[in-house]
Image 1 (tube, rainbow, N blue to C red):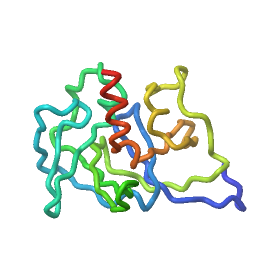
Image 2 (image 1 turned 90 degrees about the horizontal axis):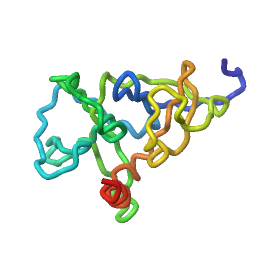
Image 3 (image 1 turned 45 degrees about the horizontal axis):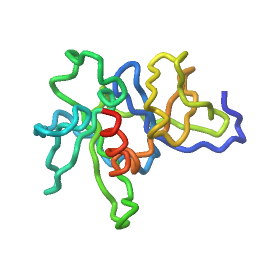
Length: 168
């Protein structure tokens, strides 16, 4: 339970599946698109093989679930996806970029305090995936579950793509 004197920050709790949840800062989530039209990208990796067009921009759509557990069978993926549009600032040119993430359900607004800080998930945790550490800033406990905080800018960076390609 949080102390009354402990300041809190608002964050969005994102669900990629019942086992895989993460959070982003309040200002990093721009909007949620229900049942968008997605276009396949034939030569892209499985975790980022779709895009959508929004406000005359092409947005890559990342499926964190496929990134974390590429070996799992995904027959239960929704036929009407939910896409969370996140924002980050490009380190190279300073521009604000938009990206999409496929979600299992609509994001939930939560409050987080420093008292909730914890280590990233490990092998003993349900929903553990070794890659969390690659693109998470930190982690906190929420309803007795470890929730990584995503580093959106790194997740969509050239450096991260190269790291993942080298592992494949």
